[in-house]
Length: 446
Image (cartoon, rainbow, N blue to C red; front, side, top):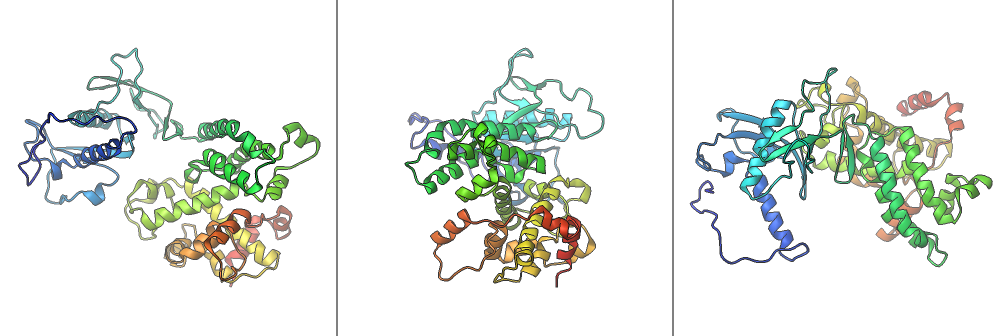
């Protein structure tokens, strides 16, 4: 292998070091290998024209190519082109293709590329065996493409088609519904609950320690990835139902005891000073959005997840139809719920705050595709970028009470773990004419 601007070549050596799982050199060597594999995808940058006799240069793009590539698209001519969208974490990777032709060409080319580095993709020897590598077809048109789910022929064998698969612990299905994923997370949490039930129900451990175990070991397994899912009210109820098993274990009661004595889940949460699933998911989502808005590039897959309206109103990279609005609806719901909680806290309960709550409420509601919202620079995205403290403390954690000074970080952490934004009573909303009427009131605040 000859690299540009260098005459050095990779040579074999007689001196070898034993690499094993858990060894001190293992992670370092793997990082070097992974870096080499990913950088060498940029064959126009790394490899010379004669890096392989008779090979044709391919234009291969991935999700970070906009920052890595240094090729002038106006002057460089490609012989072949493959759109290779890639998500890679450790040794797990996903490739995305727009057509069967791209799949057949791109998968074969990528497998050959890995083989040059001594890496082998697991494939089936024939059509009757199963491969660890899988392909899933997601139907984008009304009619499925011809032979869309036929087994894929690749160098060395075949890859089978599946209706769902697991990637980084999450279930992804061909219909893109999330019911299987919620069931998967519920089962994972219940398995962990079996391990920790003695600890969280023990009377010899403090409440704070038992809550810490629930928060770190159980809630994380249940709500893993929930910040990126398009959730509805029914999905939240499924999370609540699963988490109720944890609450009953903490209180040392059974489902029958809860039914006989009329002990609601909200009552147990209030007793232990714990957040609801909806509140925990909102907190995770708000933190997730801030990372994307402040750090992700405009054409990254994470930006596309956000859907309409544009995260930057003058974003011309994707047309409106190129982004699904489903997740944007979920985002709107979370922001509106936080704005409603703040409105109820100040107007319904009559409590005071040490910030301009009216301006903040209007910013949180600035999430529609109207011309006024698109031209308004005072929106929640600017708040996340420019007012980090207010976004983290008020929007993300729902802490509306004035902060006493001086306050240590430990005291702030304890406060946000034990106090939460007030749940808005449904009768209070109905007294004001319903949710739409309350939303109109909040938009007209001055």
